[in-house]
Length: 317
Length: 200
Figure 1 (cartoon, rainbow over the protein chains, first blue to last red):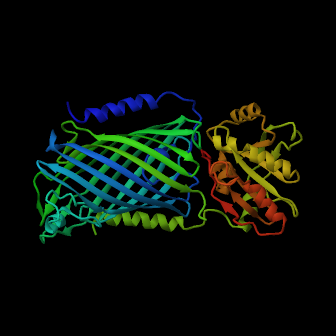
Figure 2 (cartoon, each protein chain N blue to C red):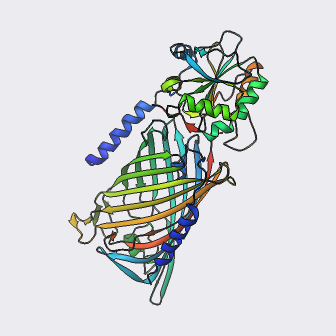
Figure 3 (cartoon, chains in turn blue, cyan):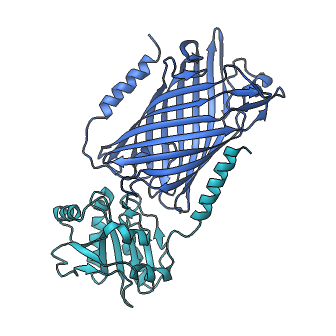
């Protein structure tokens, strides 16, 4: 039996349990913001800080486009600190600081190491808020960026502290990109669509070779439901199911294309979140990359479980 | 820098430039903005306000008076929650003119009226067709208030702490009390929380 059967069954069961019909009177304005994204500010919020913890079990990989089970254990732990602040009326500035640890067990060798990952930031501009226009969805664009504060696989190899490169935590490049975000609510249902592209800048690795990567694209679609749940602060339990996909057409070393370096991955994630008290939002999610042929390329495939806690504020002071 | 990077930098630079303009009018501008608005028709009145005018012509109140515009939505649970705050305000300050405004373009006046009747809201409510009044004031959410004296804005934004938690406050009452005590209202605006006012 594939190891991904268990998380997939969990997703299905949770979907059936949580998506039971409920009265349609949840807060209509903020569904998409609560259901998607790590540090999105909802209407009325001026800043938030939060922490996210994720456990990922790697169970396979796409060898070119064909899915194969992985024979050794790989687990990734990720803790992310994040903060978002509203600038003027319609801008949101977000900062994400991840810490990544990896455990690998290969034949008789076990390793666990990690450290600071690549710090990312984004500036989001909301052109039209959800519900502001009749029959027109909320519409925003975001400028995204990433700094190579993590350790690359090349640095890991040169450092020689690990054999299985479990201390690799970053990609090595500065990235800059843009995203287009659409979202809307329809009664208790909400949806969001996000499409983005990131351009990594070239960098010189520890071996003195110039590494450049082509444009990386990502897209995600989420549908959600604000279930009536009077036990929570705003009477709502925000549920969402998202499918996300990312791909890049490859890497170059000293301007020579590296064969087989194109990458692609698609994942399904189910999230449930709620305000336990008015200023504290907690969300939990389970998800899995899709372990089927043609749903990925040259990337590891895994299932993840995550929990997010964020403290929102409606006033600066 | 690649063409792609130049493009996104340019887009954001332009957006930032346009966004730096003040989102709301200053005190002196409000008289002009309000006076330019067409009369708002009355769509609902409770027994308490049975003598309410059939239309309301927006404007600043006369000297020594206060006027409050309270944006309300029929489907919005936040607006519903804050009706208690609205009623407390009306009871505490019967001399202050409170104009409850229904602006949502996706809710008919009839639907608003039936919702108000069903909930027995003890106020008079005026219709803002095509959300023109809300757009002019840059009101974005329900509930949201604009408190005026004869010179201009006194307080704008959030009504209470019902959605934010923390110690209970009726921000509108507190603003009026500070104003009447001769103090400057601080803060004079709080970001409104609730459902977006739907424009056409």
